[in-house]
Image (cartoon, rainbow over all chains, first blue to last red):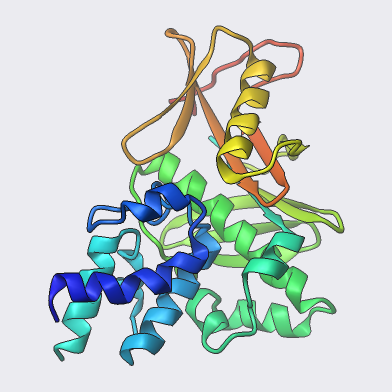
Length: 83
Length: 195
C-alpha cells in the first residue's frame, strides 16, 4: 500500500478522537496523537482496536508501545499486512 | 516526584466504551479484569484502574524520561482508596479519591496523602481548559515560577534557581495539578528526590 493511501485510510479512524481539529487538518507522518492531536490516552486503545478491525490484523504489546504517532501506526500496519 | 491522573466520568461515558470487543484485554491484566467483574460498579472500577495506571506512568516517566504506550504492563493492586502499581521492577503507591463526577489518582514512591488541587473548568474547549489549568497552577506558586516541559513532555516548574516536580491532568470538565514538596504556606522544601 502506498503511503498516501495508508494515511487516507488512517485519517477517518483517528478523526473521531481528535481534540485539536486544526492540527488534524495538517496531519502528516510526523503528527503525534497526544502532543499534536490532543487525543486522550484512553482513546489510543480505541484507535488500536479500530486499526485492527480495519486492516484485519492484531497488534501485540510491543506494537502498542510505539503507537504514539502517525509514523509508528503506518509502520506497524505496513509490517502486519505484509505478513 | 508525583504523577496524577483524573477521569471525568461523564466524559468517559461519552467518549469511551469499555465494553467493546477486546478493550479490556488490551489494557487490563486478568487480576484487574477480575476486580472489574467482582465490583458492584464495573464502569467505575475500569476508570479507577485506568487512572491508577496513568498516574503511575506519569511518575515513571519523571524518573526515567521516556514515552511509550503500555497500559497493560502497569499492574494494579487496589484496596479501598489506596493501591499500588508495578511496572517491571518499578513500584509505586497510589491514593485515589472519587466523587460521583470524577476519579483522581496520585502516584508516589512513598505512601503520602493526596496533594492534588482539583478544579472544575469555567471555560470550554480543550485548549482553553488546558491554559485555565496552567493559570491556576501558576497563580498557586506565584509569578516567579514558569512551567516548562522536557523533550519527553514531562512538566516542571522553575524559577531559574529551583526545579519543582509537578503533574497536571485534565479530562472533560475537570482538571487537577499537584506539586511535589509544596506546602500551602508557601515554603518550598526540596529533598533528595527533587530533580
